Length: 88
Image 1 (tube, one colour):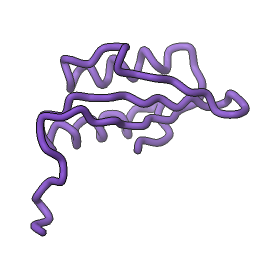
Image 2: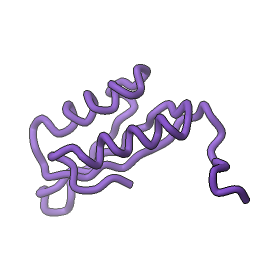
Image 3: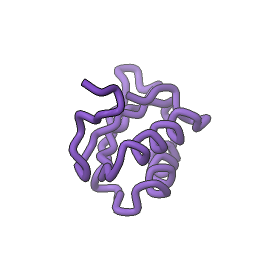
Image 4: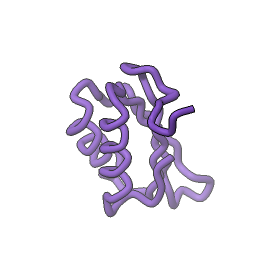
């Protein structure tokens, strides 16, 4: 298989997991970051789950992926954000 070949068919809905410390503005901040790169993104495409002790919040955001470049840009934007500890 060609390393540049994608296993994802575009466009498609693609889930991304984002973890960060629990903060009142965490979900809204992540929404704003994703919205810049996926203009179709809305809060209904995001679910939140607190950690067992409540110190961290996990978000699942479902983006409308239109290209590998767009997905890479979303991952870079989320990974580099100071509120984010991990992106999967």
